[in-house]
Amino acid sequence: MASVEMLMPKMGESIIEGTILTWLKKEGDSIEQDESVLEVATDKVDTEVPATHGGVLKKILAKEGDVIAVGAPIAIIETEGEISSTAPSAASTAEKPSQKEELVAAAPAHTESLIAAAEPDQSGDDERFYSPLVRSIAKEEGIGATELSKIPGTGKDNRVTKQDMLDYLKNRGSQAPVSQPAASAPSISETPKVQVSISATDEIIEMDRMRKMIAQRMVDSKRISPHVTSFVEADMTHIVHWREKNKIAYKQKYGESITYTPFFIEAIAKAIRDFPMINISVDGDRIIKKKDINIGMAVALPSGNLIVPIIKNADQLNLVGISKKVNDLANRARTNKLTADDLSGGTYTVSNVGSFGNVMGTPIIPQPQVAIMAVGAIVKKPAVVETPTGDVIAIRHKMFLSHSYDHRVVDGSLGGMFVRRVADYLEAFDMNSTF
Picture (cartoon, rainbow, N blue to C red):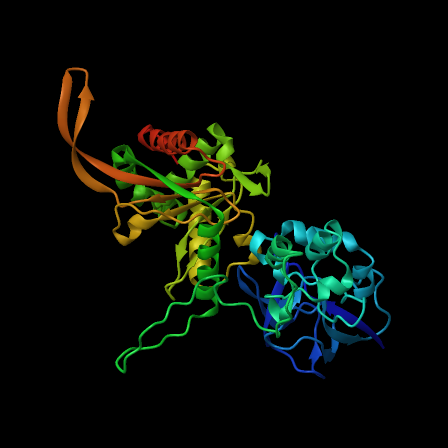
């Protein structure tokens, strides 16, 4: 008999920790390799985690509700025979400090407070965990272990976050740090609490976990990025007529419908090729220019929440390929079957507010992207149309495009030219296209 540690797996790009939702097995239960043992919630998706080895679940190391870093042990499995030399272990993980650095580098800017170091600070009596990022800041600023232990922490279990360090450094020397009791981070960080009057007829509804995450991200994005929105009206007449003409034959050939969303994504991908500085992220004073064009699409869930699955390398797909991806991701989103990888790596996002009957909207940028486009409802309108024999009034199918972008790195000229180019591609759709 031998024992092996089961570690929190990495469940997608940029995911650095997960919350234990439910253990599907109890201590002492027999388990097969690849059998689901527990459910884990990440900041992107809920998923079941399979056993890394077959045997007996000897000990559960992480309780339900615990937030565990990727690579940390969560259970011990007692196996038959010797452990394979390729099996992961806590020791082998600890021997690779670069893994922790990779987690910090991949983490979104507002999640550094949740990255726990593999070991507690051994200096003095301080038992708090410090992320590699916090330790790096302390080292650069010459903050010793004793001083670090006195800095108030607003993160989980009184952990010190990057913002705590920055706030402390602003006032360092002018006032002594004051210890504060351990407390959980607020549900929406740094949001002033407004006194709400509640009457006997009011209904109180607790936010679910996904709504809390959405709220947190929206507040973070508005705080991080100065939002500017540019608007363009596009003539969708060619696309509307082509779809009406071909939608029945398309469904007979492929067994699924073609919506307007693939047309939007195709046009956006082409425009990103023309304006690659829209396909970027900001890392401090650095601009990260993305090579891949991975377009996210906002999907409304039956619960009323939104989720954004990603179409990877959208510029390399034709209209049929994009349509198949759109339908697959939308269907799996609504049945809660998306994986963490389906939700990671996005570089630009589109939101179809027209599906709710809205003619336009001002979407909020999903960090760390720098832009997002909302497409409104397609509406019939009288319009002036140029013809070889002169201008005429005709009924056209019109739609507003709303392009919100981060004014730190995207100026009005680039933001405006980009949305205009998307409209140009939509208007230039070839009516003779085949599938």
